[in-house]
Amino acid sequence: MAAPKGKGGGGAASGKKAKLAHEKRGAEETGDKGQFRIKKVLELVTEGGKSAAVVEIDDKGTKGVVDSIFVVKGADGSLKAREVACPALYDAVAQKNAIARFAKLAQA
Image 1 (tube, helix red, strand yellow):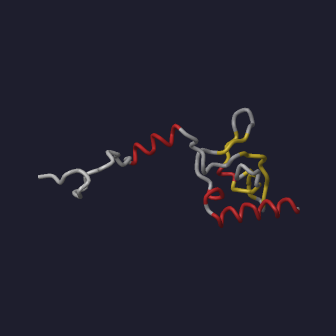
Image 2: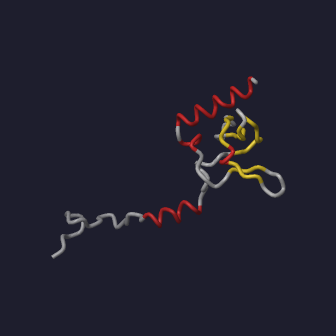
Image 3: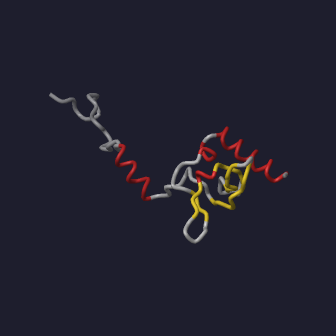
């Protein structure tokens, strides 16, 4: 015999159902999918002999330098962020490093 609702036994008193992983993904896809993607790609640069990109990493216009793997060049020559998460947007250490790379590049 099942326990009455709200009296233990795992019954949901509020009637709300927990979202499953695939339901959460579906909801996220309708909103802004790029929360960890670079906000704006400004230019490609060469840093220490390697290709890199100057980017804006937040809505405040903070500039940083990230590896060019996070940028794709369109057929028309325009630069845009790849549809992958960039560590400079979610990892505090990577973000500090990207900002420091930009500062060093700006001094040169």
